[in-house]
Length: 96
Ligand SMILES: [Zn+2]
Image (cartoon, rainbow, N blue to C red; front, side, top):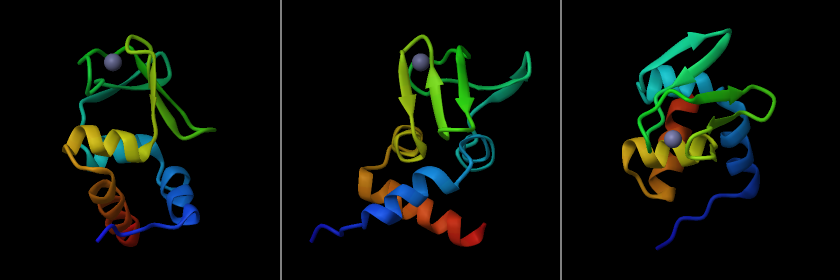
């Protein structure tokens, strides 16, 4: 009973929810502004060697050398599978 999401839905979830707002207000990851950059505690290595790119809406950990989009980071922080993370993001998008 795999629920399918359209490519357009997934694209919108990756692009339309500002990732710093997701991290700060919904996932409640520790975060700070440092040297003009939004930094968050990496959910994988627990370091602040991170940044977000407003242009691509990706968050990056320079220590893990990984990019996380909105779906990736939701899966990790909330320990959800892909489908659950997408449904969570759809639910907060309806609010916003
Ligand atoms: Zn990391």
